[in-house]
Image (cartoon, rainbow, N blue to C red; front, top):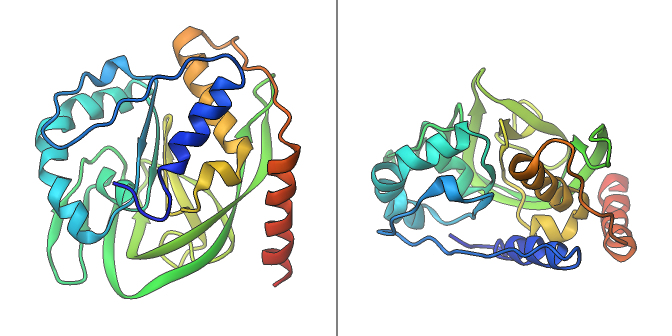
Length: 239
């Protein structure tokens, strides 16, 4: 699925790997495809309207479910946005009362609301973005547009605290959920081009999972990207 430029996340991952001399092969997964999930280092699951989710939900559950759940439990690095995030949970109860089964890989569930949660968003999180893998506080910039309210169970931890915007449900102040190396959130934008630290965090997780915990990725000059990020943060936090 792909809305609000979510495919730009794949472009950002590919480009920041290319600048480091890391070869990144991208495989698109369509309904009906047979996928060997254990062979992948990184996965991205974009957002989609309720109708799009309904079209792929059963294929995701029945065809991809066992292999993808096993890969997630084994530490597959996966970023899921909006609709993709919802379908990784236990279920999505739409505003019309339709219950879409989820993969159950994340201990979350989603309930459709009557009003949409729309606008720019800032989520403060801790990411291991340095060579020594020590957490650094990062403020992620994104754009949210969802009617679903996602609630966390004890099997996940929050990605971070919402400083601007609505977050997962507009109630508890949390945005996004993490289980092992899988991260789900509502941050469109595209998220990764706006937040190079987060892009590098995902690449680093994948490299260390594949080649060992002592592996580090080469630093990149991200002055322009960080300048754009800081401009948005200044505007949003001031407002």
